[in-house]
Length: 260
Image (cartoon, rainbow, N blue to C red; front, side, top):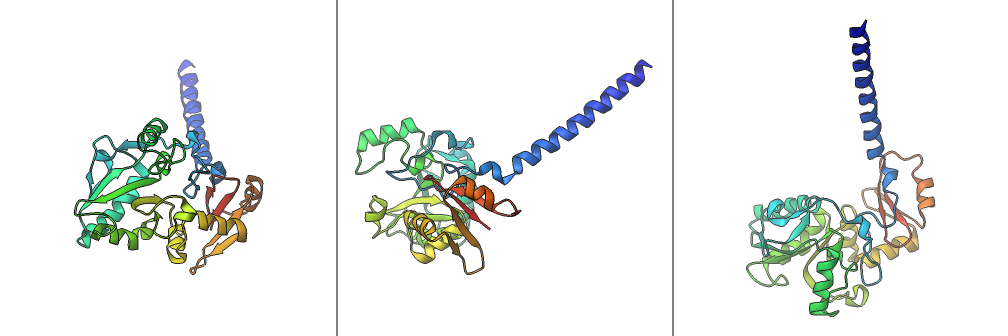
């Protein structure tokens, strides 16, 4: 009798554990868990809109451990592992085309480090803690060991091809009045596809792209992808009720961008 009781208990525990794992998996994958204006790859981060410190990624690694196809200028440089995966794919393809002299000069910075940079160099060169894209884990400064990025083969290749991998040249020439930042041919920001392609095609910086979506409500790409803007979380929740395949990002202001 005792053996039967023990066996039933084992089976019950095993069954409960199986159901619990299924429930956890389903919950973790539910896209509505990411309905948050301060989360996502399209967050506008500048001298007006700061990084929410609770959104800092938990996959920060030393760049020397996760970045390939580039020299690391400082062994203490850190980078998001997820960002490094996209970066490696881009630099690998550049290498295959004979563009090989890349150097990673900066990646993720915590708020303390960012404030130290700001205190040392001032507002003409850096932004205060929280207002730099480096605080988000979505930005990387890429240099060339062969010369300045503005004229090097590495800089030219990235300027024309980074969008294919979800990156944008965040501070291009002629946009300083919009971004508030002078031309930085080394600073690349991950926004993901198709958004990087839209911005490259339209020659928009992130401020212009977000402003367009907020004003017009949507952008339809040439291949039919619909990018829609909803001015509140409540509106976005209603919009995704009957959707099964979509991506979400907050704008870091008040709304949600849905791509499907």
